[in-house]
Image (tube, rainbow, N blue to C red):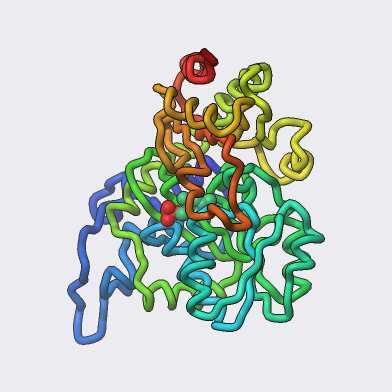
Length: 381
Ligand SMILES: *Cc1c(COP(=O)(O)O)cnc(C)c1O
């Protein structure tokens, strides 16, 4: 019997401990495991870089939430990304990445993997024709975020999956912004789902982690081999904290979405706001596609200020309840200036973001308090 999402979030990979009945998976803070006899590990556990029961619980749960055959947990989203690319590509291969990719993803390709000999180009992932035009005979990966960060563009997962597969490339979807509660890319044809579990999956801004969820068992084995060989695994306590967060993902996401919808309404009527970007808005160019592949439209909002970059910076500085901080997806609301903060590494590149842009990660506080804070932050003296 296949269970619903919230049931899987609470139970998948998390059966009571067979020895004690503990309801929560034990935190196995151990690097190594005593063996029964020479080269005879109990239950397959030898060394915690290779496998750890707490990490296994998280991995199993993430695979169940995304509908993949296997989940792999890493020390960070970036470690997951690096391991994936090196497992699947060789020097000389080519990848297509979004023209408004997460700044760290852009930096990984432009500054690290390029030195390794990987070729890459950028394309607007909301335009399948532009992605097709960017493909080369050596393209191994089509890398997509949807919604994108920080401009909240929408990619059509089904269209990009057929396009990638037609060219013998894999479709990789960074599902950090939506979380598996709102969108499950494997059901739309994606081969690998990437997460920064630091964000919505962990949900409490207390742990950094990453994950991959894979559609195909052979590919999963290949990546798991690299995970062990490269060593970017997450620690057991990180896995335990992340799993604790995952249990409430559904209820948190619904409140993130409720609050975001209220704030979008408020921003739309505010004279100091020039433009609001939110995929839930019918006038958003990706709204129809988003509605076809997302349950709701998420807790991230970007907006442009009427007063240009100085006004955008001032709003960020004045906000009080919205904490001025990078990252996203936690229960507390955050505000940031992408041009000078999260996306500063993309300055003077094709991925540079507008200076008048403000990004909100809407938390689950009382909506009227959040709106009052934005009201005072947007005041024009
Ligand atoms: C934060 C983030 C990452 C990187 O994850 P870390 O856990 O910070 O290494 C990748 N993609 C997106 C969309 C992110 O928001």
